[in-house]
Length: 364
Image (cartoon, rainbow, N blue to C red; front, side, top):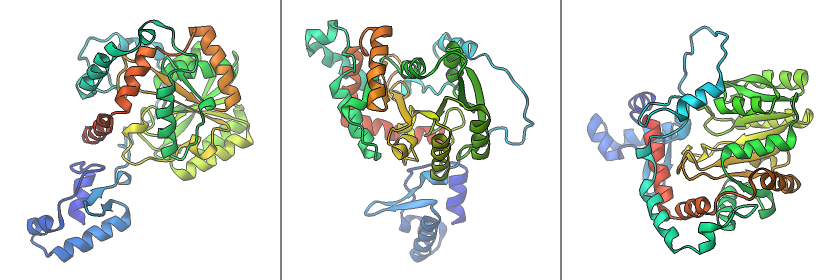
């Protein structure tokens, strides 16, 4: 058991890695197979590993807590210009490292699948190559998203889903709809740097709450809601940016209770969801899109060059967001972009691509 624990702790074994066979490990360690069986059973009971009938034992995602960054360092006041960070990352030379951005190297992305999808566009209708996008976006891609939501227990009918030009535009539309200059918005500390840049552009007041390994510090969260009365809370639930932490069911429950008590709307950015080996708690699924708005995009898993985002929210809110998208962008996302994304997502290749990404990310 200690040998397996040590390999997991050092990340020689990572989430979804298959453990050695019972006979193989018994031979390597010079013990009987029954000893290995008992060790594996005990580790499975602890939640460190899990059994897949007929396949073997695998490392559980729960076995790998987020890496602690500067845990023992003193906390210092700091002021970071999010616009400067964005410019540095967007204008950097090809190949330059971009720490903190959440972007994967180009060689990790499914470029061959994208090329196949691009070649397939040569056979598309002329309208796909020349017309404006529909106000709600591609019906094909929306149906794919609806099926993916259903897999996590979130029922999203067509009237509650809107495709946008990007994930950033999705948040921008929500801010235009719900906020006015001077309103207070709650973010995590730390949070994705462009959340702050976008909120500054909307001239709102930003307050923050410390983020822990299981979500926002709930005592601080509840106290901040009572004292500051924020209109909106913008956060990541799965694989929080930049900490990598994951929202626990207990914290999610208390966050939603506090939001209800203080009439808070939550924007849940789920852009890294596909990187999770096992799905974690989602505010939108627990809330049923009553006061939670789910947004996301495909920039991190497919391509930041072929951009498309989405918003899942209350049907009456979606109607107003459609009008805002028409007013600010005249139509929905590019039909070319949505055709490419739908083609890749509907292929068996995408599932294999994401599984490989999870392994590479865990090791990195």
